[in-house]
Image (tube, rainbow, N blue to C red):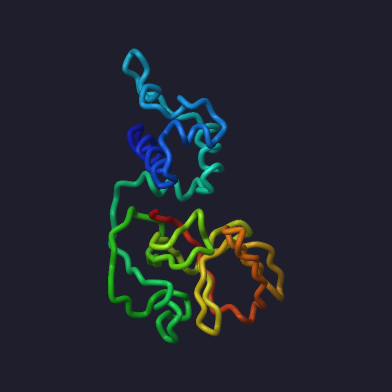
Length: 203
């Protein structure tokens, strides 16, 4: 990560939440000038970097993971398949691993780790305020998921949803909506077709 990339990513983080850099700092409980442009270069011209504490508090205040933030600093681009959540529910659209069998459209995104990744366009408000209608998430099938990860889940009856993984056991899995208006759901393991981790989001 370069100095300019870090600060561009912080500006983008604030903009996606409808905030100025000062507003982002206040939301994180920091001095309002923490992310100001005047703080990014020392008087002698040396670049100033944000502290790990200030960055961590900003990410916590906005609900963005360090992994997603790091991905947003990348300038490398790659072409990946993109599908809508509604279309994703169609039988036969995904293979057994949870990857689109025959995507019709592609989109260019910052490079992320792994070859088998694709993009999903979010519909509905169950992931608001983190993911809103029209946002795009990059999904990587086939990797281990842990409690607290944001995931895309497809049920055997064709329902596709973006949630946060909660408690899990050998019999059931809890899926949490970040929108408090939507109650958590508990699904039997046998109801789930596949579950893939969200590794990046464009908002």
